[in-house]
Image (cartoon, rainbow, N blue to C red; front, top):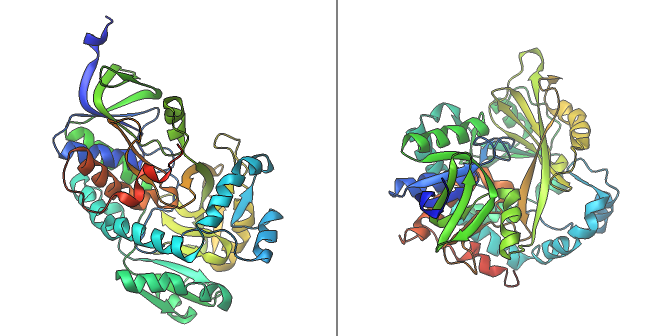
Length: 422
């Protein structure tokens, strides 16, 4: 049967079943709305699957433009373990990189720190509330995480981070290598100092956590549907999308598609200045029964090792590449021998590295709020490196705005209106 009368109706459509979309759908459902969550794949199988599984209570200083000629040359030579680029994308990325440079000064860093603190101070609490309801607490660890610095120079660069941590009440301890060995006996003392961020939590499978939240959403009366988000179109004062179970209409729609958000938004007239940063991971068996209790960041080399269900996960830094380009896991090859100087990893558990894409704005903040030119279109994407951290609190914030409730935090820093020329 055809015709608009046969379209199934719900209160809201949420496009994207990563941690951000699942969280928005859950929060809307908790507030009594009927919600259809739509994705081309099962929940938690894209960017939400492949990250380091960290719920941060640090990271008050964003990734910034290189602050010295030596660093710029190092990146330009394309040999750094923490960053890699495809030459074909650099020309298109130049405007974004110039914006990054503009957002790398003290005023912009202060603005970012205060905006991200609003989200992070509620991140663990929001995750834990979902985890209790979804019976996913077994994945969580309250062990903090370690950031290691291999030189006095790199450690000195933490002053700004610690300044904001003291302002915002984020707990940390500066540790010598001997004290780190008491926490992690199998880490080799190849670093100068470490910072243990005590309020950060982590999980042993971010993909499984996202799936557990999605199952809780469905058990609570939500609907998860396989569908094509690019079929979204305005219809009868709302939005309609095509799924494997037919067409669904709602007065309000949320775009939470991460790096795929432009595929839906550009046809609607939005061209947000977002860039994709790709990242890779692969799992290793620990050699000789060695163990790791928490995520560990080798700051100088831009990778993380973290204990996961499949083994020790090595996650890489940034690759500037087209979102859909074939994988080029050169950073795995570069960081693997460096990681082995720090922790005894053995053979690879996975047959090939996983690759995913982080959706990033130059100011390092997401968009959370109403679309500028469509009253009933809502945006929740661009979370960059903190998507897993901030997914649940972002979902709460957008659900509160959509339902007319007082928002827990000031939504102004995340407004799409900061991109006035979209």
